[in-house]
Image (cartoon, rainbow, N blue to C red; front, side):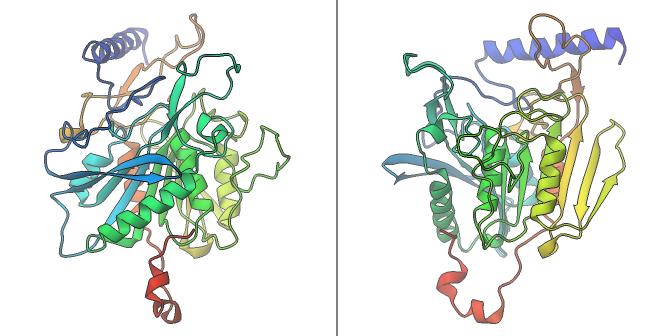
Length: 390
């Protein structure tokens, strides 16, 4: 990209950022995350985004904590037949009330339901004990990476998400197809989604992980060793699960080509998933016009595949701008800038404006898959067939 275009795109991105600060609303395409972020917990928190369909907030007491989620069923859902469900987990510092991955738009266009659960707020785990408790708080998930306060606080997010799914599937039994439940996540939420996949059985038909690169069944198991994803071990009943991993190649948060504590990097992550799903072959799909490559492992057990979408010149971002009433920013801003390594200290400026929508690409991938129909003997036990694994 020429120098002049680079300057213009960088100034445009800066203007968008400044505008988002002035109106006190984050851009849809950039993860709307931050420290000490008080999430909108009102029952109508999603009313700003949702005008066509129902958005219901549900709160329960779980493990002595109030835990909430939003369920969105768009008007486009055909009640004559059951539809898929996508559960999306925000990243650290995010909110269920700020749907930033574009799933609302896709749900309206394709007629499926979405659930946005809320994590819990905690001090980041790497500050000294004397540090004030109300500083550097992040909404987060206990993803087992040893990187977030929810894990240090012993929050049972696995149990909460299982309980939440049980309730959603029970309440919406006439609407949601239990064989087509998918989980999506960004960053900390992406790792949590992968943890949920490997530690449950017969619940998820597929997973999308954006900007959260971990290696299931990590060979490093030493207690206290920060190189391990200690919660990434599969349960004995694990069924190979299709997964699409989306990784920015200049991501400095969950690095693409190097390990950061429990975060393994992109290639080890996709290889680990291929091993876990017992895949036999790998194919590198052609590069698209923007240079993004997709590697797909096939021949996996249970009809699963494992895909890695590598996004050139992109950082730790959600690569979608949303559409319709879910659109905040008119463009999808992806990091690309020759200035990014100059002072101030390295960061990932949003310098390239692009129409890339990896969430839409992920839906095309995930929607191919569904859980197998139970065999006749199992089907006789209806009370067990619909039970989320505890």
